[in-house]
Length: 497
Image (cartoon, rainbow, N blue to C red; front, side):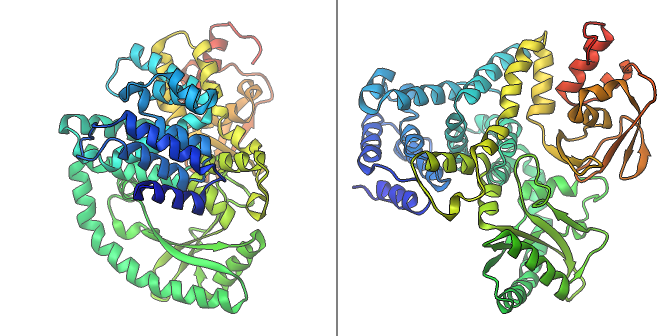
């Protein structure tokens, strides 16, 4: 057995599902033979790429079928292998999966016209809606390609990085795969914004060093406090992702002042139970002064729509600096890091009879909800009359960065960045469209075009009498749902909202 294949088996044993080692080994040697003599831009044998892709997927806890398909995912396009050959050796499920992965891999969403983008987007989202395993393999494939991007011709680097930033990172975010989203953004950042990346590194490096030194003391203190209380937990620090830091620094209210960033390195507490999370929160507020103007975000009681759960609190350390502390269970942590991939791994494990504490409080319904937006896209394609409309909907809604806002009843709604009270009203219920008089955000009257931010409490003030939507609303709404419904009503094509 090669050392590389042995490494894959080691990762599978640490993170993955039960597998038949002989089948995985067979897939590796089949792919290695298909790629014999082929070399990557890095100078490594081509087989190194599917192997690294498989390792990434194994670290996400993916099943045998996903790992085998990852090992084979370049054989149709580059290895002169046919789907029938894969079917004969590994069965129809693996053959179909490899074909779909290959189809999505041939879709290019960068630097294309609207009509080409439309057709390519149709292919991609159709494949995703059919089998979520496709997107996991493609995301792992893209992660490894980005890790070796500096080895390919310079003229291709920016195009691939831009596609990663505009399509694959938002895709990871929509699937709740927060860690992957951050990795992809950080890898793309210096290729798209080289000057800005150098500027960020220059100003952030000393602040990161200072924060690391300062928070190390707080980490030791927290460990002692939690241990003394008899709670079992892991405490560690998490540096903020570079691209996320850059985006935060260029906000108007921050104005590139890095001293205004309180989560350069966030402390994270990983507990065994949900009740331990709240016990730790109480201990933190007993020994550290909370920062009242920043408050607590309880995403355990009110999870984000993508399934994210954690408690975030901001407190003052002994030197008067504000630090952010995140508290979650191990299960919540895995799902915050790996999102839909973790849910799918659970579903696969359950289907194969796996039991144990790691399966508690999880269900496949969460995975289905994560993919609702993909099925929405397939419906949009039928509803929208032009390619440009679909392109706008995909880029500004489906693949935009997201915010999370609250209704007066405490329900959480997932909207694109800069969504407005009109978009919120449609997310709550389309019947509100005929009753909108005004809107309040955090108790204050705002215009209907007011851009919402994460954490906002939004209330729609209803009129006593029906009111027709204004044509002006189309100039600022962000969601596909709001835009198409308003247009239909104004054109008198939809009397029922």
